Length: 86
Image 1: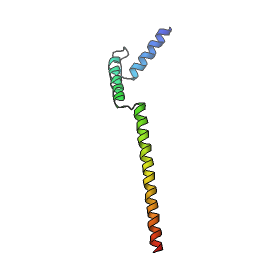
Image 2: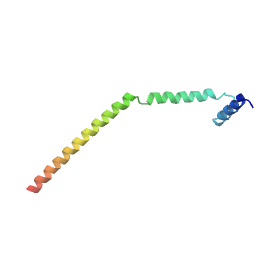
Image 3: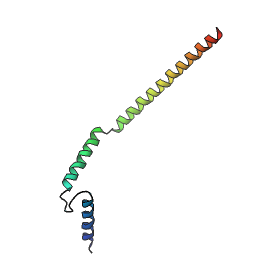
Image 4: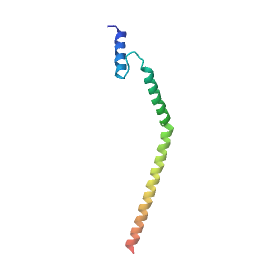
């Protein structure tokens, strides 16, 4: 068997396993579906700048939450100390 026949057999098996008839007529449809998926990924995907911006926003929110929670705990401690002292 020559090398081109082996490649042709492998191609037919691959196409047939994906719903084609072995002669390449289904490649256009498959390519259109793949391009549609890629367009969707590009439209909805995040860039590096988007990710860095979101990381910074989350970090600021986290620091603010820790500061606010610390303030509430300090206030509760003072109120508890004042209630015990009275």
